[in-house]
Image (cartoon, rainbow over all chains, first blue to last red):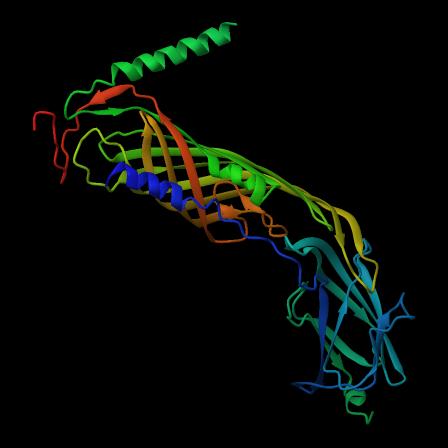
Length: 164
Length: 237
């Protein structure tokens, strides 16, 4: 190959280093816990749908996350980012009320370089009243930007099956 | 003053070496360490202003068409976004070999169209400050940070490229490196923005383009023992 061919290749092919623009952020970067509703009938377990669910943070009675919502099979809600290691919620079905207290460890996690950081919460314990709730179990302790169900709320059969 | 004298005498020695080897014997080749700098990094001033990388290379023709290569460099990243600031510092090295694929007719031609392979490794630290996490129900978080974290990465690169001797012992060339990550050790809460010598921190593979200016220090004239599939045209022909 002649030298001139090489020089031409050198001059024409140089296109500079590849550069991927980070672009603008289109993601939601708030991690939310997903809680599904279930009922246990003896050893059987089935999911259930609740009508008239009201749900809000204990410190935010003025701002409802769910306001007498009907047909809810799951609820999705944020946890506190503060250094306190628990967040408390009020859970109401019709006229009955339970307080749910979720203990979690929060840590910063980069969502993407375009969107910045989110807070990932690692759940380690849940306390609750038992007017509506039978039990609560943790199915996935990592609350992040994914869609996995984090906790299962087992409703007392009497509440789940009551006409609402 | 002593340093300047040393520098000048070094240059003179280099020129003497170049001149003494310019009158080559027929069928012989000149070789010596070829030292290069990748000027593609300068394009980042426009394309990615928060990142600065310097890459140097040294190769040597141990046998005709066989060039062991060492590439090394450093990279700094610093940028501010609305919701965080990020910085990183790191070093890297790639070690491997290039094989010239050209079949030229003379022995004293040094143009290269080559393929090669590298083993790469890098060490870097990175951190983020002034982090703001928005949240519309509870209060958001502001002023958080992720302190310095270490990242170690190993990868393998396949290389292809061209080199031309534009003046005596002075070369220009471009190359494409296809990088495949083997190991990356870092805290999963934050992937590096860019791994020195490899590319995007969250990718398992990537492409890097380089454009290198290099100078060969002509320290030795030698006759290749065997030139497979290459016809040697000497001056007697």
